[in-house]
Each structure stands twice: as structure tokens, then as C-alpha cells.
Amino acid sequence: MKKRVNYYKELSADYSKPGLVPEGQRNELIALALKINGMQEVVLPSLDGYSMEQIEKENKEWWPTHCEALRQARGDILTGEYRQDLVYFCQDGPYYGLDEQKQREKHWWALIAQPGVTMTWPIVMFHQEFVWFEWNCIDDNTNEVLAKGSVAWVRRGHKGGCYFKGEQLTFYRDVFASQELLDLLKAT
Image 1 (cartoon, rainbow, N blue to C red):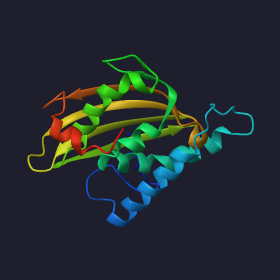
Image 2 (cartoon, one colour):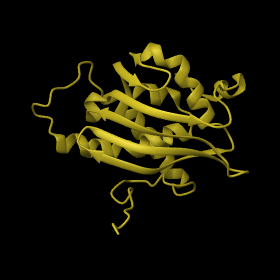
Image 3 (cartoon, rainbow, N blue to C red):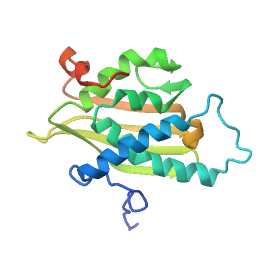
């Protein structure tokens, strides 16, 4: 039988289940997320002089910042991870560019980051520009799974950001967020 791996062994923080990331580190990850978003170049950088090894290293550095931004409902950071010309395939899509998906995705973010719910990413894998992960949201009181999904990002490191996202989402409890939950999101 193939030995199971810890997907977080080479990463700065483990988001595979609740309670593994101390508060001080969470704050540092948010600061790093803002810094990384500021590195994104207007034009998708070419691969000349930007190796796949460097891109994969940067994607591994970025990953915990993405998880923390979702847990803290930081829509501003999440939107900043995408390129302006994002292509996003999902059951409600396809979406092209940032404006098309913004209205729908804010409901998803509000639901998965609502108070009393913890999002986890038990599996994350990296290969050059590709980041693939599974996620789920668990009600902290009832332990029910509210939503789950699997996602593939194509992300050209810090300079490129995410230019393609493919996602399968399943919501069990709600599919649209209440205005109260939407108001908790930091501006998108």
C-alpha cells in the first residue's frame, strides 16, 4: 500500500484541519499575502528567466496566505490573487475576467468564511504552475460539512498570479449568503 503523505511538510503553515496555525502566524500570513499581491505584474510574465522551479517555490510560499485570507474573509486579498484576465471554470461559469465572477464568488466566500465555520484544505499538491487542492468547511458546533470542493489553479508565481481556475463546489446547507454574511467580507 502506498504510504500517505503530509501535504504540508514543506509549507510554512498547516491548514489540513482546524487549530494548527497560531494567531501570530496568521497575522504574518495576512501581511505576506498583501505583499505577494503587490508583486503581480500587469502583463503575465514570460517563462524566460522565470523558471518553473522558482514558480513552484513561490506557489508553496503563497499557499498558506491564501488559506488564511479565506479563513479571515479577506475578499480584498482573494480578489488580488487573480489576474485581470482570469479564466474561471466552474458549474456556474465559465467566467472571464474579474468582473464576471465577482458577484457569484462573494457568496461562496461569505458562506465558507462565516463565523462558526472553519475551512480546511486536507490535500494540496504543487507541480510548477499548477496547484491542486481539496477543501471542506465544517460547522464548529455541529461538525456538519457545509461545503466541499476540489480546485485547480494555474498560477505563475508571485509575479503572475492566478490566470486560470477550475473548481467543483458542493454546498450542502446554503447556496447564497445572507446580506449579514456578505457584510462580514472585507471589500472585494
